[in-house]
Image (cartoon, rainbow, N blue to C red):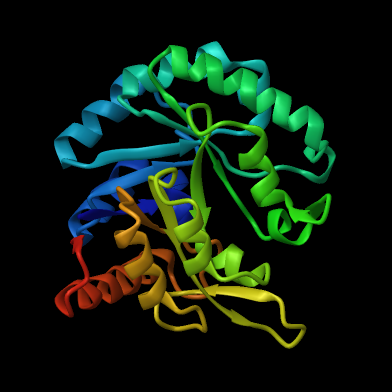
Length: 255
């Protein structure tokens, strides 16, 4: 049974204003775990104490690629103390998209992370689907170049969809290497650009994606809304209600 988590980037302004109160609200709403993108200068010990109090699990942390390159030992030590096993590459700038260098660095980082008992994963956007290497999406080229024991998949299913591919097919393709998915919905503006919206308010086929993820054995279905037109806490509450309704209709998730 998949657990439901929240990528805290969705409520980043609230966290910056009041870190503790925001995490308490996330727990009160019913999320089982949280995925971090920053800790706002707090120690691993203090964050772990708060999570333990709130009975929130750490899903993973989005660690900037430059931190993994230049401060890997420090990141490993912090996350071992926190009790987090997933270090996740969150995004690559255009300058960082030197693919041969990236593949070599992911292998090196993945080996060191593995030696320390942690797991490296990669979170995609749409450019990994639209950019090609030898007529193959970068998304697939990354996982061809780096073995599963060194790099796991955190699939952002909305960006796979927006990139022009079928998330259900991609979930099946990476079954066994896919511990976490991001479940996200989107609409489009007048220029056909993606606008992230609450689950169930857009065009993404969420039921099919959630069903496929559960069949593929994912551990976590993580809600993320990159930008919220409504107050972020209201948005994440609405998305959790969609997942609760999905569970009530037979979806095999823990909410």
